[in-house]
Image (cartoon, rainbow, N blue to C red; front, top):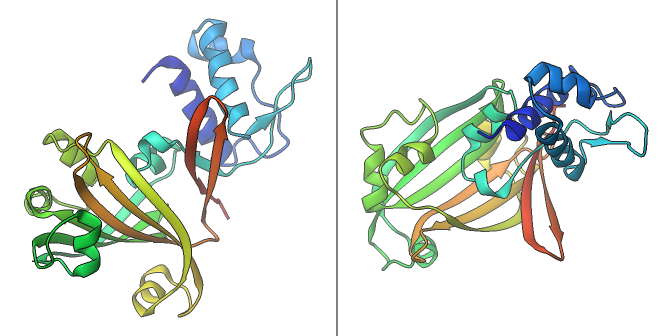
Amino acid sequence: MPLHERIAADLRRRIGSGELAVGDPVPSESQLCAQWNASRAPVRQALTSLRAEGMIGGGRGKPAVVRRHTLSQPFETFLSFSSWAAGLGHVPGQRTLEIARRPADADIADALQLDEGTPVVQLLRQRLIDGRPTMLERTTFVEPVGRLLFDFDCDSGSLYAHLGAHGVDMTVARHQIDAVAADETDSELLEVAVGAPLLRERRRASGMDGRPVEYSDDRYRPDMVSFSIENSQQAHPALLRDWRAS
């Protein structure tokens, strides 16, 4: 990881953990240079990234201060819940409740551009941050990709790192975000009431050739995670997922 990204990740961790609280001054450029044995260029680049995310503010001769402690994930690493949480200094966790090969129903077939009844591999996983139930993941993979998971301990780390190591291309993702009421499964595994509002992110991931590889219905507790969109006239929109350390 480039030095400026390591500096930024460490500052995000310190902010997210409460070591640097809202309103606290951020270490100065000279302090960060000394800490990291770095020149000012990567330090300034790291601070610029945190300013762009809204985590720190100030300037014009005044020391930078912490503005908020919600932690956000860049779009390019959105697929991996484990990498996101760990990179922010939190402990990711997961419990795989089901992995099965079954025929695709009509909705899954449409999402993955398959014929109805084509074999697919489906997972149900409870995702945690620091031991707290945070998200329920219902994921379907096309069968040639999903079968790579039958010999993998799905609770040992990131599925996407494992699949990437086996050459699976998931570089393009389309996200649709809405709200749904918790069903009985959601209620039990996310520790919310039946009917409680949840944030839902439906995602279809494809390779560069445009062929769908994965379709997922992920349901988050809204008191712990939120979503935001950041864009500019010069760049494509960036989807961010925020961890609420409540």
